[in-house]
Image (cartoon, rainbow, N blue to C red; front, side):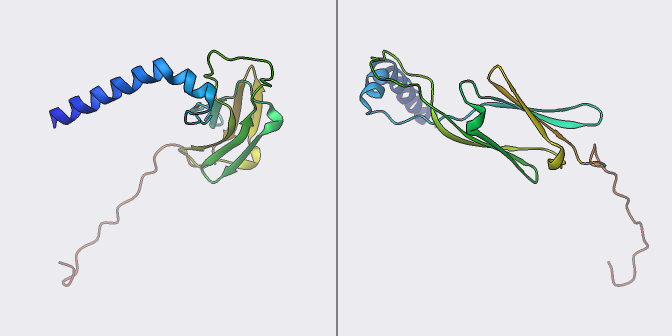
Length: 153
């Protein structure tokens, strides 16, 4: 087991070194695997009345290229980050991922989709969705204690 871990670690180290040495050359020639763009998100709950807040890093994405949909406890963010025109440019390095994306954010509570709102500022998308009433916190479940019947044991 330890030997396999060492071999895997050595393989990963070699792969990273090769990527550092040749990665940009492969990308410029179109030989590298294409990286997909997937925006990073933060999800938290706050406020009174309580709400879910989802922020997504969409720097360089036009809001006309983004759609939002809420299905049950899922927020679906779809869109595309378009590449800048590259005519007449010779790139030394390309690291900013472009292309279509679809991000499904699992919410930890029931929400009121009809009352959601979204804003976009400085490359950050912020979606606020009120939590459904009566869904806060834990719910106590009463235990019905009954005497066992003769056949229940």
